[in-house]
Length: 303
Image (tube, rainbow, N blue to C red; front, side):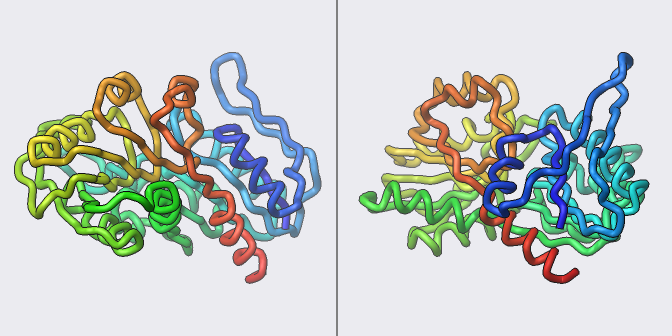
């Protein structure tokens, strides 16, 4: 098996390489003066099975385009089979038409993976299960929710009267998995979204304990998160935690988090954190390298 990494998340790629004890294939990934992606693979990978690691985290379009060009480079170099590992799959929130004339961008990106040359994909906590059906190649859809739950429990095992909160009905399954692992109650906030990145809490279903942990797939601008926090405080929560797989932390997320009463935000390393996110003492990061390595090993064994 050969291992190739894009530039989106070098720390995660290095950790996966270290665990696998496989060096990353040397390559040149740069940009032309006009911004076009330039790729050159400097090792013979003909007839080899290749695992390509690239998180399509911010800047999403840059990293997504780099992924497609890397896939084509591997195809042109006659790799036998290409498994692409995408810890964060950009555009997965655009999984349905919201109105006439709007695209289903998650469907487009899934199709482009096959067109670019991917034979299979390993994905981590897609925004919704429906996105799985868009892929025309075999996929392995992993979840880091159990990993986050176990790590949170280790740190906060002394807490009692804990409630896991789903910030919307669509995330109830995710929150239920978390609640079962930490043996906590479950509640849900029903909301309506007026436009992207803006939501208004409507109603809380279930009883909230003194300690509440919001379970979500991502934190982007933290607007939805802060709305949920306000709702929980109004309903008696004293200590509020957050667990989300993907820590995007787009502006003004860090400012909102620092000013909020949230005690801790637990995320994975599926996304390379910005410098401001790294400085935020409320943010705790759990590694997904072991989980992804297991999937890479399974893909290699099949070949």
